[in-house]
Image (cartoon, rainbow, N blue to C red; front, side):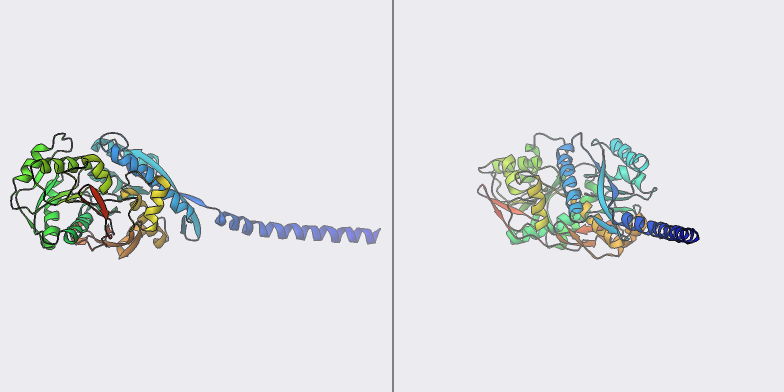
Length: 406
């Protein structure tokens, strides 16, 4: 009996030791399981999904979701040893300043996101007063250089696409390649409240690249329907050897080109509206209008497309317009967060400002724009595509490489 009792005691002691070992190992095992699981990083987006800009931003939303999916499928983000997938949460800016402000407040106070993509067009000025004091890092797809849009007053504001100024560098290089003898140009642009800020900077880049701007800057309202008066004004600038149309919607460019051709004006027309040649051709039609035109935009059949651009086209359907303004902003933000190894907007901000180059959907981008925007390295310049339309036929040309934005 005594021997039995001793064996029982020994068995109990062994059982206790085994249980203790299991309990001691359990926290470590739980921590390992936790770190191996993929977490979620919520990133907000602010696009105008109703109103006049929805024609543009609806495509942006679709491609933004595609690019988020691409990032997640390629491994997501690794921050401090933990894996994160991106979850997008969006708000509609409704194509109005008040709507954008309300959407920014929803993202900041209701959604409680610390990173936001957007808005586009000239609407950042309505979002920055909400994002900045709350230290929400926001990456817009467009900047028209208005005060409070991207400058020293917006330390948490960044630009994730060529936009107006970076795009201008692409435009002038395309003009040089296709029309090397052109030296005098006339400029036409929308009058959306940004003209007084953007045009002087556009003029500076144009002149630094050897061009002379002739005649008055021709401007038109975004809601214009009949563009024949604009074509007449441009035609009256006799010294112009070419027309440079910066910003605006493709319908404006196509109709101004048609108006000029009807007046017998066949001068080269550089249409920088992120619309590829075939889409522009579809608006203006074939015939006398469809010649001597440079279109700056992404094309599904361009043999020079980088793999990531083709991947987006293949995922979304190759025969449709694609702009990739805010999708590229998301891609760049993901790369900077990864490089910063932090989810703290202040740390990511500092990392962005210290970087000289970054991977974009289009290839290697350059952080620059210090003089143009008055804040160090808050803008990205990246390679981009263009096409030439001659006699109703579209031809593809080598991509223009990224340049440093002054």
